[in-house]
Length: 96
Image (cartoon, rainbow, N blue to C red; front, side, top):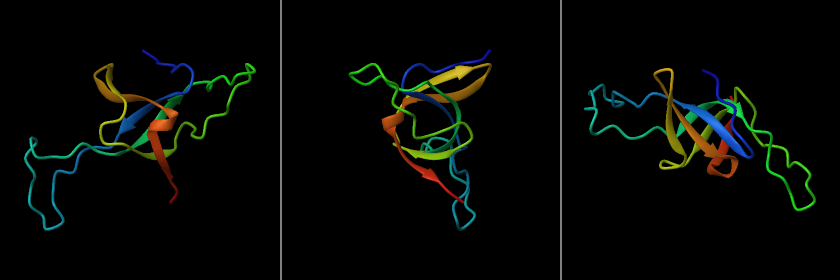
């Protein structure tokens, strides 16, 4: 199945949660924090302004982004977990 977000929405594949501390200790699944970083998988066409013109999106497919811990809605597609969120829920693009 393929998803195409509408408007200013973005589909993000979250990174896996940290399973080890920096000291090498394993973290139980209940104590793991939700990741705040992921990769953009699909992008909507953009929001319409008052004149009916499309506002271009700040992110594109393949961008690694930072988003709010509780931002977006969790969706499952073909057994994979994704987050569907608005463009404005994304705080930054990671440039390496």
